[in-house]
Length: 274
Ligand SMILES: C[S@@+](CC[C@H](N)C(=O)[O-])C[C@H]1O[C@@H](n2cnc3c(N)ncnc32)[C@H](O)[C@@H]1O
Image (cartoon, rainbow, N blue to C red; front, top):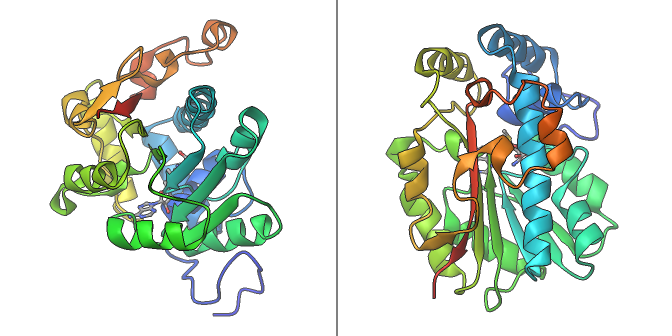
């Protein structure tokens, strides 16, 4: 189908909601279609705080990347990077560690097309269209861009993307493959929706997301902790997302009154052991 939109490849079925475009809608972006908006509204009916949750997720991403820059990380591999929006990883990196490089990876054709067009003339950034469930292909593609080398520490970012890797694909094995491909002193950042607080409500969200191209699942903190095998968690550990190194003023003005159950989102950053 011809969409006539530079950021949407013609073979994309815009009638089928996509996780990347729904996320863009929740963030107030304009790279989404009626099907995405309709399903996002259904998700919001069962989880009214969704727009706050996605903003808290982006805020964590920014704090984590800034912290990793301060630790001297020179390359970032952002897996499931999404449709470019405000506060993209390469922008945070440029603000905190000039010279560091970012490789974005996503399986969504719109996310990749838009990012590629936007970043065509930007140095030290590359975009790879790949499925993170195939670490060999992802790493090969990332290295081929010339922006990533596996002999120096890398920060692997898996921010709100592991929910879209179902248990049958063995997400722990996939995360371990990235760990094993990187050198000691590399880092892993994860945020993940949790079913520890409101299992019934998040189960209804899962039912809504089952209608997308990438159904998603929430997991318990114990399950998410296992993704950090081989990593030492940085302070404050794997915690409710608003408590991961918050800006004191932001926490004081938290739009959900600091109610972590309303976020049902946890996050952590780990350093790969030697
Ligand atoms: C909720 S968005 C998160 C975007 C970004 N990481 C953030 O936190 O702002 C999830 C993204 O992961 C991507 N994604 C889901 N499954 C994927 C897979 N198997 N391989 C690569 N990307 C994937 C989706 O296309 C979407 O862009």
